[in-house]
Length: 232
Image (cartoon, rainbow, N blue to C red; front, side, top):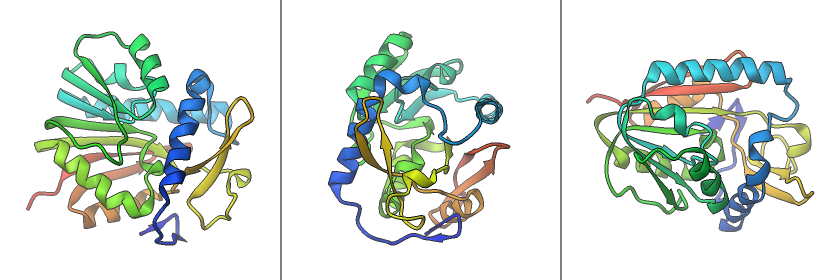
């Protein structure tokens, strides 16, 4: 698999890296709502965010909805209008604590689980994940999408939003690596996975795995993808 024309080394990302990634999101939970996109103008982020919101509105999640990597509930409330039930999963208890405060609708069930180990306990009409796919290691990409497939009812739909933006300062192992470093508010540095997917190449890769998903870039640093399993 390739990302933005870069050859990505197919090596097993060690579990300590994923543990460090989880630790980062636990550490930044209190300040997460204030985080922007490093190196991108706020006005550009705002305009692109409106495009993501428009894509979410068109998608119109309905029925039993699953949100993966829900974080502090940034998108959770927007998924509720058409939902019968909503299951929101995240590995960071600190993030879930914020989400539970923000979203109190009784239709929502919050689940603390590591998405690299988690198995769906039921099937859903819609699956959504925001700014998570780029944090899935390349070598776990196919397994992750198998989990998504296992969570979907026949004819179910998927929507994801993300970005592939990485600053030069983050690229501690060079531009060809998918490992970056980010710093929490207290100054502690953490390594994370950040795969710079190119929308067109991501769409091709998903098609190879049996998905019919259209991936579109926004006017800013973001992209979104919507669709479902390819019909046989």
